[in-house]
Image (cartoon, rainbow, N blue to C red):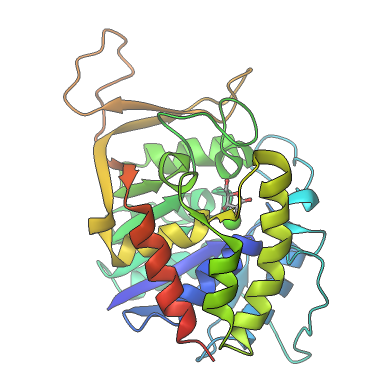
Length: 316
Ligand code: BDR
Ligand code: CA
């Protein structure tokens, strides 16, 4: 089993990723931690509370950072995920939901220390909480099993600028701390998620016999798909965060390259994830120091979509 914590800013694709994790028998979810990004951190926590109410087993939700470490907060992208993060559909938030009293960073540190070598940390939002957890207890670097991140872009452009992917751009300093920590990272970025597009009809079909979970997902994905139709001309939506959960379960669906990632923290290329492949001798002395990041560069998109579909079909 994969023992997992997901750090999330739900978010439509976050919601799909969380349902995928909750209904995958091979995953044991220890809890969720929340972060600003697609919505405010308060809204992210509320949304996580609702998503837990759709899960087969309740898990704790610990609230995280409301703002980036250094830079100003960017406006929340309500044109992508809606004002409430769920495509502005009406949501029946559970009245009895109470977040864990700990901060996200503390929760992450506690869980990793309680199970050395076992925890897969899956950040699918800005990396602020993860940087704060490293600051709180640097020893988690050697105790985590792996950190599987949705974020960045190496061989292709970004989605918030020609350089940057949203999660990295939202807190560039935190992202740099996390990549530079020299712990085992798998990066699932736009190189693989942008070409992994779930057609709307296919999503609706997968959700059709799932009156609780599927009905909710189909509704929120409609809003998300409209955004992609209007901006990119896609039929469907990118499965960014879900692909990250799939990577943990089915690494064979991805091709990777190992090396060093550095994040651009100022200027026009703010948030760019620069990649230096292992073994390459660069003249610039900043490179060749680490090989801790396995970057996903190719993907069996059909395999990923099928995996997601098959799990969602099993949900109530
Ligand atoms: C990432 O940004 C957010 O909008 C999505 O939830 C995903 O985590 C994609 O760039
Ligand atoms: Ca996200």
